[in-house]
Picture 1 (tube, rainbow, N blue to C red):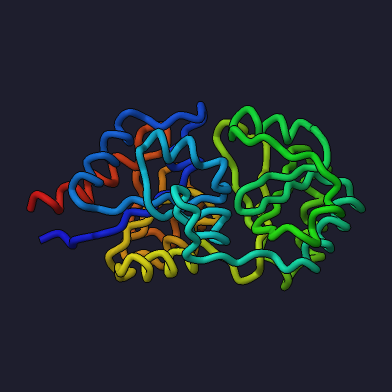
Picture 2: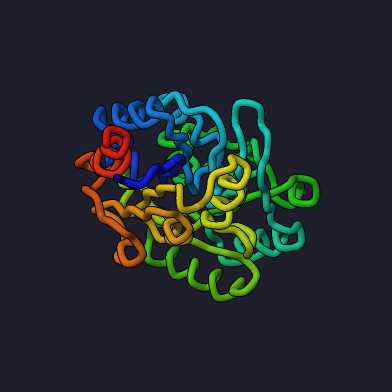
Length: 277
């Protein structure tokens, strides 16, 4: 008999969302069937809550989800936080100072708000694709007061990407950085900056504990480097066909790519069939 799983945790960009920013009809149908069979479905994303809300609504998903690369586990319906790990204020100040010094695009996020210092091509992407409206403010005015959960460096040129490497070296051992991408903007790198202790895997542990579900009863699906810790903790680790080689190496199974409804294929193979055995 197939193993019974109770929780399905899925990444968004490159896993559910294809290069057009859409979720396939097959994926939507499979997720609905999984939920109807009694499986809890949670999203696990580098996105903040605000940038995930439209997808949660589109999929009619309630309950608890992992946001900001694991810095926050919460229920957006009532803002209940199960787990949160903000960046220390002194580190936020250092991040801001360094970004100013090297002149790289930096976003800052609290649990509910998105901050930018000026309008740029990066804020245009946030607004147009992610549905985020920035609060334009001098960062020196907000870091002492705001609880900053995540920062993001948004880069696309070779020069900008080289600045990220300088940033990475400078904050090595102080912050956790992870590269994320979305198929809709293949030339753009989104570098999520969170507290050193943060990972999707640690957030999954907190989520599963809160739900009373053992990690072997969890299925996780992802495509990026920031999903490695997530898949490493799950009972069944599934990488998308378009996943990085690093993620495929830790996966139990590689499904179809995002443009061929890999999530639906995995759900059909491992979750729905087990409900009919």
